[in-house]
Length: 101
Image (cartoon, rainbow, N blue to C red):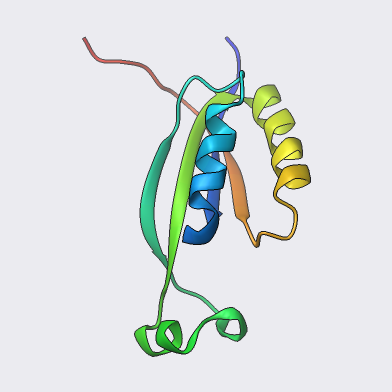
């Protein structure tokens, strides 16, 4: 059985469209999910005044379920193509997955 991972990418709304288009152009990706999220944390120095008052920052979370080797290669390309974007990422192993009939 091939080991699979869930690659999570958190981006600002300003680069959401660029990341979406970039992911759709990647031949190793059969699909992904994106969600609008609110980021909370200690990075107030990079938050706008409105975000500081609200206590959160609007962000977008992309989730990609891939073979781990493909996720590693994709992550290297993301680091190259979106350097300086402030993107946050993490990758976790998937213990089980499938479709219910």
